[in-house]
Image (cartoon, rainbow, N blue to C red; front, side, top):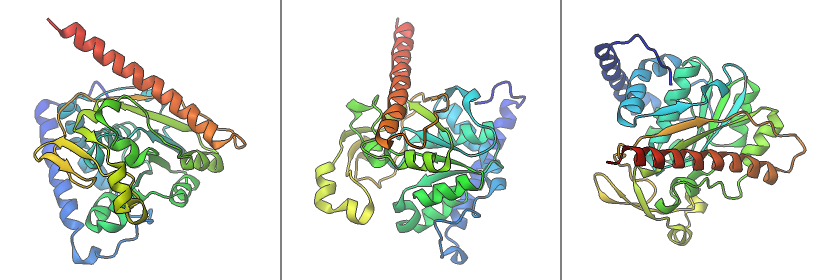
Length: 303
């Protein structure tokens, strides 16, 4: 995130509180009767002015609560279409998403047409949440929506691992899990845009996932009606045990690090599965390095 800001602590705190007020206002606005209709594929619901007002609060949360540290900002594309690919952590309220958005908004500016692909559960089934996040650039996750953004010169943030990565067991917290998914590769190939990986470390400690729940999800048919393949159990605040993929929780305040990698260009004729493995391998190498650096840092601080 940007350094050398001239803001005083008082000004920063004041901006954060004002931003929180705008977040609450946006949430209340999502419940208004005139917003009962929701088109999860509309690009024009994104509100740059609202993002600018909320940015101080997002920045304060990322830096203050999560202790966010970022490197590789030079790899961001300041203008023009690009596909940002992140690793997903911590489930429905994983703090890595807000940290990543705060970083991108801060570095690129709220006016940059940045959109984040959001799960169907938020955009279609939990409609007030869908209306809320759409004001910040949320769109229903689909190849068509991503292509429309890129064709218009915008930028897209995707988490191709989805729930299989977000709800992976705590023991696998330092793994990149993309499964067999190649949709994001095909999007980049068809739009002829670079992929810029954004790797997060530390966010998967926000809750302790001790059961992924693939078997339960299969029995309940979640993939058929909810596009979910996991029904996790996690130790999380304030519930003690959070049951299922939709329970919000208070993330634990562990340090989060983001590493933005060099752009990857995928040839139009490259097999998508090979290209996915190229992206996954580079992200895995970065995540492994971040985990090693974190362990060494802890060892250096030990008495």
